[in-house]
Amino acid sequence: MGQEALALLLTRDGLLYTLSKDSAKPNMVIHVNCNDTFYYACADSEELPDPEWDHDGFWSFYDLVREHGGIGAIKWAALRRKQLPIGPHIKSLKELGLWDEDLESLIKDDDKFKLSAIDREMGSK
Image 1: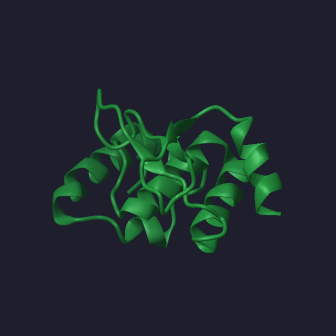
Image 2: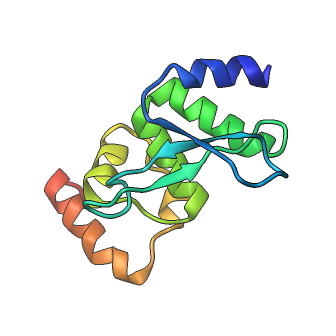
């Protein structure tokens, strides 16, 4: 089942492939493209877990991407890293109803000003 799901994901944009130098891992490592997700003008990626080694991590990514596309991948990466994305992505997550208590729990004191500005812009209280 994991192979079929991985094949479906590989047909989507936003996944990067690299060869692993680590003999304990498969030869090909797949990364989720996180460019400009957590910082502006920043090339970045998050390794997609192997479904056989990290069942929950892989399937949570799969479910979010199949249901919500690219914004689902952003939510997955934010939860995986325990880090909020940049403002425009937070705004999209809120507008699309994907903002939840798991993302809310990632808020640190220095994020509160940024979030209040986003909420004001969206017309929320």
